[in-house]
Length: 208
Image 1 (cartoon, rainbow, N blue to C red):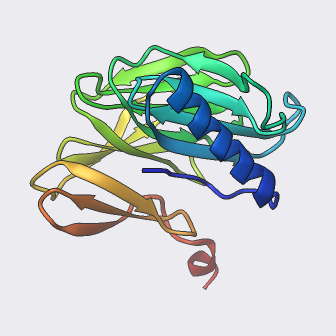
Image 2: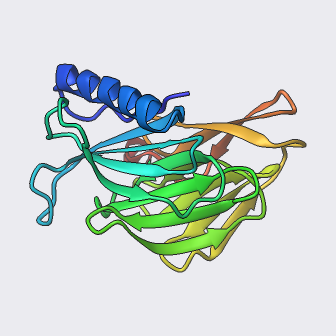
C-alpha cells in the first residue's frame, strides 16, 4: 500500500523519486515500502520545502529530500529506527512543517513524533494496539489515530485524549479525510464504514 499527499506540480521528478526509493529499499534492505507521505511546504528553516517520508515492513522511517537528484546513491536525510514493528501510518503536521507523526504496527503500538530537520524523536505515546492510520486537524493542534476498535483524538503536544470515538466492533483498519478536513471516514474488520464529524464545521457552513 502507498499513501501520498500530492502537493506541488513536478510530477515527473516525483515519480523518479518514488522509483528510486522503491529500488533502493528492495536492493539494500529487501524491505517493502508500505507508506509514502510527501510534503511540499516551505518555512524559514528549510531550503527546498520538499520532503518525503517512507515507512515499511523493516520497522524504519526514512526522510528524503525531494530536491536531490534521483540518481544519488543515498538520498535519505534521516533514518529513523525506533519503531519495533512495521510502520503503518505517516502524517505530516499542517502547522509545523518539520513535524512528522508515525504509527507503529503489531506489538509496537506507539505514535511517535519526529523533527525532520534533526531526525530526533520529540514525543511519543503508547496506544496499546496497532496504529493503522493518522490524520492531523487542518485547523487545530489535534491528531486523530485509529487503533484497536476505536479512534482517538489527541491534543498536541500534551497528547491528552480529547475524545474516543467508538462504534466499530473490530479493528479499525483504514481512515480517509474529506477535502475540507472536517470529516473522517473509518473502515473496520466488522465490514462497516463510519463517518465522523471530528474536526469541526467547514468554513462555508460557518458563514451561512
